[in-house]
View 1 (cartoon, rainbow, N blue to C red):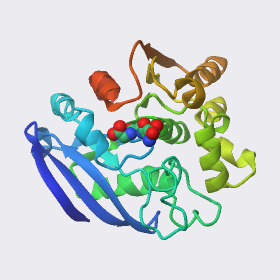
View 2 (cartoon, helix red, strand yellow):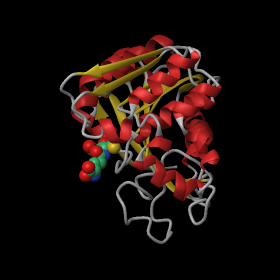
View 3 (cartoon, rainbow, N blue to C red):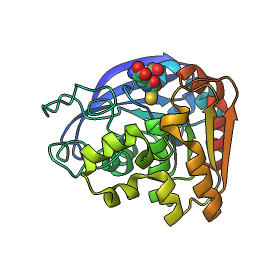
Amino acid sequence: MDLVSQTKCFGGSIEVYSHASIACQSPMKFSIYLPPQAKARSLPVLYFLSGLTCTEENFMAKAGAQQFAAKYGLILVAPDTSPRNTGIAGEDEDWDFGTGAGFYVDATAEPWSQHYRMYSYIVDELPELIGENFPVLRDRQSITGHSMGGHGALICALQNPDRYRSVSAFAPICAPIQCQWGQKAFSNYLGANQNDWRSYDASELVRVGQFPGSILIDQGSEDKFLANQLLPTVFQQACADVGQSLNLRIQPGYDHSYYFIASFIEDHIRFHAEML
Ligand SMILES: N[C@@H](CCC(=O)N[C@@H](CS)C(=O)NCC(=O)O)C(=O)O
């Protein structure tokens, strides 16, 4: 791991690291916030998965989460949203696919399958790396995220309820199989057979196995992606059908931006802190 930067914040430290990822076969970056308590003892960790076009920086710079991580005694980890500069033709052409848009799946289709393995990176490799290098309580981790990353958080938790104590999301893409962003990503990363997409769709996954604990979702009513891409009511219906506890809060007037995330980040950090 190479330290890229270190910045003091609310008595703790925001650090950015670069490392050679085994899952992605490429360098990957992540940012971590170590609150002041981390100097004295091991702490639980909350992962934040960002949305389309983001890097490891957006959440740390814009969500205002550090003060609450310090208040509740949690370490925050925000990974990048895809491998970068892999040399795959066309990886930088679209903002909603390829670079900055890994969708937290393990690609199986060429040419993406060698590098775009964000699911394994988030679920297996990164927690192992964090556990080896930072003062974290390895069995006390939770996950949250925004938009593409909100959906990433949902699928990681639904597929691994034993590894995460709690899960929440801000404006998640709730049913990728049914929206344009998801169809574009899944057809390219996973191939044409839609049956292969189901294990990466939260609204399908929750029908197969539920998360033991309530899921918290905040969604702005004025989010321009709400009606066409995010589809929270599809996930809400699936949860209702199978008895998954869900607290879906429609927040009047809020849009899709980090101003919305900043407005509710304390609620989410407190929600996770109570479970951690
Ligand atoms: N580029 C897109 C918007 C992409 C977008 O809204 N990305 C969200 C995640 S889905 C984000 O967090 N952007 C980075 C930021 O706001 O810092 C557009 O033109 O509509």
